[in-house]
Length: 168
Image 1 (tube, rainbow, N blue to C red):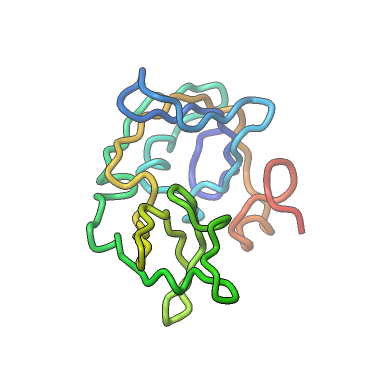
Image 2: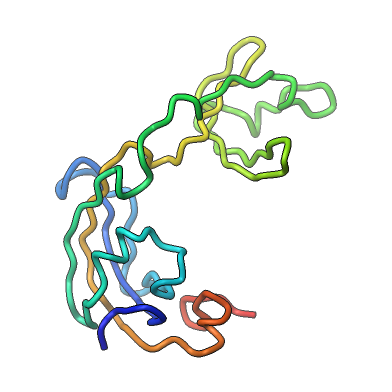
């Protein structure tokens, strides 16, 4: 069965930066494959485009340029916020807010974002709201472990149920 819309796909892969010999930043192994509903909108279109038409047992090896993945680093997405907003009961929360921490935040409209604490200054905290992989080319090597038709329920819910998927 070929990978196409409304198929449940199980894959293993290594994701690298800086080329196919570069640092492995994510690895999914056969004992716990990545399972997703193809064409449901949860994966990058460019990623799915590379897998479309492949079958169980096929290998894949491709690059997604940053413009096909998470885009450029946008300087305006790095903001300095008042240090006071990170206080709890008048005290700066050093256990939660440190350089390298990822913190969930909301804007005035209630939209949720994850921010990377980039710098802590005397009165401000610099937070980077760019995707962690923005500006990076992504190098994938992997294998198709299984392809099956999605159930009507999986298609209507937009995600996989059961093994490797979502349980209700």
